[in-house]
Length: 284
Image 1 (cartoon, rainbow, N blue to C red):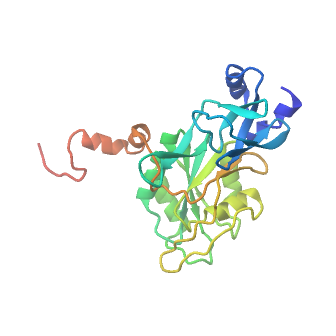
Image 2 (cartoon, rainbow, N blue to C red; image 1 turned 30 degrees about the vertical axis):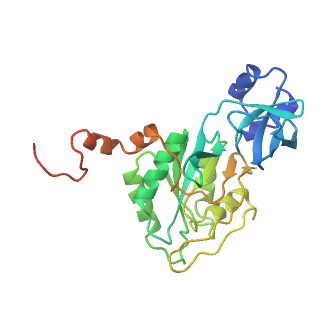
Image 3 (tube, one colour; image 1 turned 135 degrees about the horizontal axis):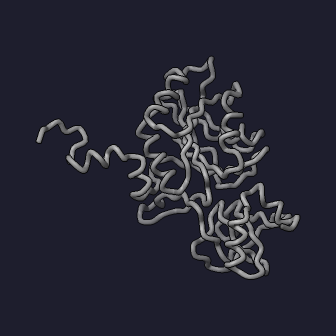
């Protein structure tokens, strides 16, 4: 592998991607989409970063996290994706691509409000349907904050309800759980889901080691916050891994097909096979 191609390894480039590119477009370079600005892409290319105009109509349309084939100054093809997170568009009659080739989805829940298992269930189903592994991140566990529940108790309840899923208790203010979260991310590509005010931007800044993303105030009445991320962007994490930050992404409105839902709600599938009501108590 050339020295310039080695510059893409921290961004997730591997031999499998190289094989895909070699059988796709002869003589093309690989590039990963860092930002998408409608008519232009910011690409990480071997040894450099370039902003390129989208002059060709590609199918599928590239999104942040995609690997593309770059040739003669243009993105000429999108390499087959390993995963894709998507949501319904504003009109509800189509889908919007959010992030491609993600390995893990961080489901962010603030402990300054009740931890809703239904939200975690939906986020888990969406993650699995996207082809990614869910990780629950409980935020705002600072000892001097007004949390709704005991952090460790909440974590244990989530672990009991979702065996096999990593659950991390964090406090950005006190540095709790951030190193553990970095360890779980490893060299993977991750993105975040969570309701507004849950602390996603603070987690992003803690992982990046800088105030890259603006954080917003939380309303006192309902613990809701302003969406402070305004554009989708791929960041290289210090020490390894990639983070795709997405604007205002919550579980509501995201798209999940049957496979991810069936895996998450396997017990519901079993019940449904014998009765149409989950809480049915009839006999025979």
